[in-house]
Image 1 (cartoon, rainbow, N blue to C red):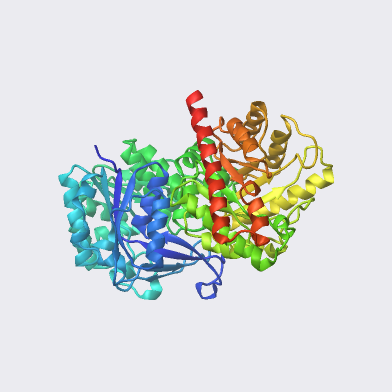
Image 2 (image 1 turned 90 degrees about the vertical axis):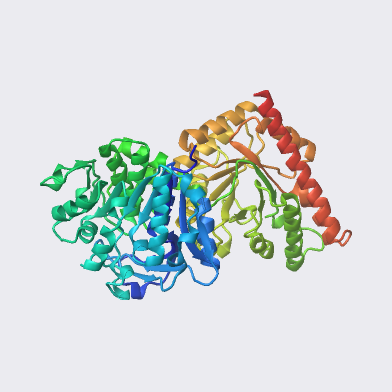
Length: 639
């Protein structure tokens, strides 16, 4: 039984995409960082569509190489074939979006890691585990990398795998155009044509634009080029025609491109063509590997290409399977897909693991983002407060011990050192944005009037905001608070940060089984879709059922709910956990003062030392983790 659907082989890079649209690459002031390279993009695109994918490539032994490897893992791509070259740097590409026809780019690939791929890097066991091996044209341009590709293709045939080629012609990567011509897609070259034609018979599927078939066929007459390819290959040929869609030819080439098998196209705005072909191929592979008829496979491909040309970046633009199905069922509502709110919400929510990996199906969160509570304690100084939060982090890491499902809430004002030290530890990290105890809600001044400072936050930080609100709030208070939350939410999305909304109605007015559900509906009605909800421990099953129904009615893809503690004694928390744990959408807890409250008072007053503080907090935190885990296990047994 094969455990992989697709193995791609070839380029991998870090793409730095200019964020200013319409300007020259010379004038770009900031860049977004993504993974790139055609086979790397396709591995991610197919993984998002539910195929089990892997990539064979090489990266450097440095930060960018580790970024590619880690991002591939987040995208669900098997990295057994990703080698690390100790001597060469990871490839780099700098790109821009000038207008709908101009997309300047510069390849930094001189002696780069992926071009050091050799036959020795091809693992037969990996190839044998795959149903399909896909090669891309660049790695046929050099004898060493060509030998690696040919070995992979030979092994694929030995082990009964399908083979596919993305012609992926980049003239300057074949040495027939200069460094400044990275945008160029076609330069005639008899040498390139000859090199390609020696390998075309090895493939079951060959995909390219008209220009790419021109180089493969050795003529700028598209039909003649396709016939030249057909003369040396029995592969199904898929020719991409831009706005005219794409056509597939299984046998002889007819007298018109329109006579090929076609799938429906989509009338969308062209925003960015870079990476669109890789999105197209991802959709095509989904259909091909599922043995769909070519018109259906081409429909998938055209739709995935439409997503790509309408969004910024390559891999980040590709859809999930749920998103693709939603789009095909509903159709195009507006041509600029990136501004379709319903589509973008599904895109964001269903591709979340690609932005922030980890298994967060269980959430055991030590919350020490408190500020006022510490500032009011005897002996507090800002320096002592910061040192104490480092002790809290030590306790959290001691309990976590490298396991999944643990996290912290930590602020930047007092706890900056702990917050920064937590990055890269595997902890889930929530960071508060509200001014403590404010009502109407006010945000931390450090965020700026437009929340622009979120661009400085680490990408693994989750924006957390606490709002004291109640269904009985007057219209002005409700509008004020929803506007503040909405501004923060929009800024979090703009900066690619997960968003947690905490609501506490019990501090404002009386609560019943409908209170929390009513507030949840109000925030969704205001256009706010939190990735996480942080809720008070509701006292009845009915209250939990209503709150969860409100969330799932609006967003079935939410990450989930964590229960807050409000300084409750441990026995009360245990009772509330027992109720909450019956509901799978409640992932766990985020509790603070129950763990650190008395410890902080004793430590600030000098009654206990660092070691005692860490030991006591770790013990309490671990006990709460066990209480939650036991409550969840008991609920599952009961079910």
